[in-house]
Image 1: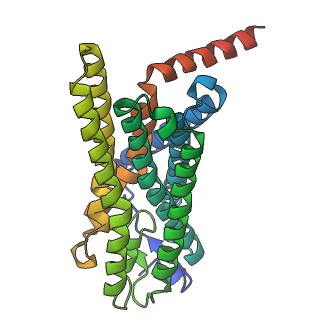
Image 2 (image 1 turned 90 degrees about the vertical axis):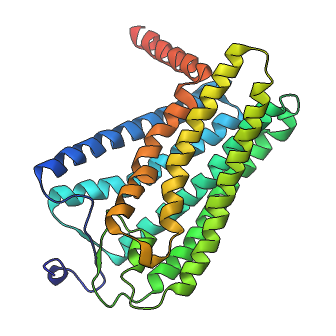
Image 3 (image 1 turned 60 degrees about the horizontal axis):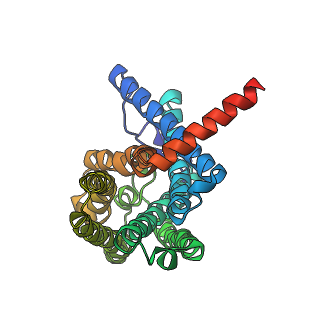
Length: 314
């Protein structure tokens, strides 16, 4: 109630992930470190992909968009969380909350589709190497990336507008560290059942269908890998598929569990813990899993560092 007395009627209150304690400061420091690593890794990947001609392929083009989405997503959430903790101010305006919802849904939805596109690229490259130039080319990759952004934005506009139109006539304290739709629906004093049903249908399109396509792609890849005669090739492909699936599970699992449950089954502490996976942790893992473990990327990185060093020496 203390916060509500010092905010305008349209402001919300983000209760945050931590309370003001020494333990919370340790966790916050950990998140700050992850945030810096995430921004650095993904920015480096975008620069590397842009500069190195050997990385001008459909896979790395899609990866550059994934890195950009991850930068925007973490920047949309983490700086506000850090500022609120350090300043002690937990308020967020109605407009700022709307922006958070819009960006979050755009990037989450777009990334779901983009990950599916990237898995299709790997399927085409490994299972149909001779047809790969036809199945995946510059036109197809641009269409996939553009489609992920466009569909993500359209979906986000609908859900943001619908969520914010609900009346919030009780407490305006959001038990979360950012404005997320499930956490806000709890505050509505209007029946949201019909909207939850529509959101469930949207979840099928953005979560179940892409994750099913990803699983199917990697099943086909593993079948192809098992038929390879080279033991080294099998080992490398198994390793790649394993780490890719770990990231997919870390991203889609908590996301599905959060957005596909009815409002009455949501537990604030549980939702906040799950959100950490798809908003903070996964964006820091993506560059490592999808690129830095790749020989071409490592060679390109060495060449770039070497050329920069020689340039400074001269």
